[in-house]
Image (cartoon, rainbow, N blue to C red):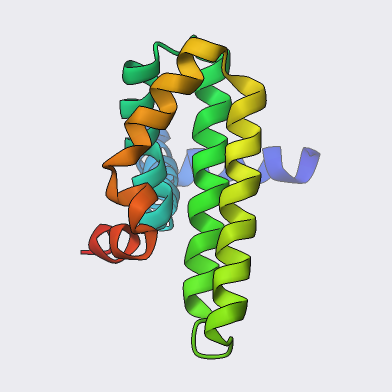
Amino acid sequence: MQGFREKVDKYRKTMGNSTLLAIFFSVFLGAASANAQAISPAHRLADRLSQEMGASLSLHEDAFIKVRQFNRDRLAKLQALNGQAGKLSAREMDLRLDQIEQEYNERMFHLLNARQYMSYKRFRENRLEFTRPSQALASARR
């Protein structure tokens, strides 16, 4: 730690505090920008879907956080499965898709109360994210 402090003091003397702060903020903003670009389309789609579900199902904060994670997990798995589409038979794709959907529905069933679960079932009936998830993921990339 002492070596780092000495280097900072040396730079401070030669460049001044304002230059040192400018360098620090440019590095910090560059890292934040890189992180924002690393967010996948599936992640953005999951967050948007979670916001809509939170409002539609009247979720409290703890439940919303869990639903958002469930959506992120589900859509990331679906995206990975789409990447393997050429390597798997149609039967294997269907089985894996069913497994992902079953796991998601079980998680939702255990999280939501009866009224919320019924609202969730109605919510997903006409949503592309549930009826045609690969199509929803493809449109999220645009």
